[in-house]
Image (cartoon, rainbow, N blue to C red; front, top):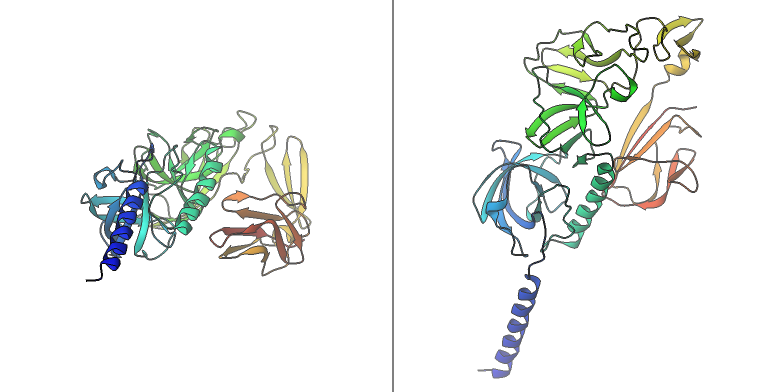
Length: 382
């Protein structure tokens, strides 16, 4: 027997055991953040996918029994899924909702995180790349939290944590809401500060709901009139007839939804004002067409804009997987104004000393892009 070889192997194994012991020393965390090795996945279950794997918290604080509905599973390709159901304790089977429309679950060592106000700084046992993706995501969450909500997604639909929110989605399938700086509250059209900024379209739990800023929703049996346009009234209810009554003087008519079919509704952000009455108040709005111009009148006077300019439709482009500093648009970009650039859910400020500059159809960011960032550009030509 080669005793020298045996001794070397014994020393190596001893070192490995010491290393594993040190890495497993508890690091106090106030929320669950652990690795999850997904070994199989398939469409189905009670939601989009069913995933089976091994739960492992190297801090020693949590077990698979602590995993609960509403927590987030990150797969090894940085896709995020919300846990809708769970069975098992160490070997877990999870029914998950595909938050970011990944279309599949990548097997391998991912993470399970409880997303609340206490953000987990480190998940033991996962790759540096996945940890970096989680860190980048939580930067966006922290930025959104400054406005009083916890946003766990940066797409058209966002999952929001708001303790004991008290919402129940009605038959029509949506609730217009606005953010008052601390919570999302029911919107109404009685003043600028309470106009709808988004819509609750799904309630997941007593503390979590889903916001959708605009676009289509599919609601079977919504009970609304097909082909009708719906307005949000002063008292927060919906009607096919606006209530621009001039009382109070900052009254608005807000168009929030159009019903396309028996199960299809188009939601519209209520910050666009639709006036039907006169301009008796400082913020009441009326519209008229005069010699090819749209005239918008309120208590402060009349603004005239060419219909040709208004009909110059906005273009929206989405960029993903871009690295470096440049994003090249498919159309002609305006030299200034008439452009909105959103990076990771945050609107950017133009300028050489700010976030980006424009030259031709190229947007150059002052800070290099990471491959997992999402850029949305909305513009119309000068």
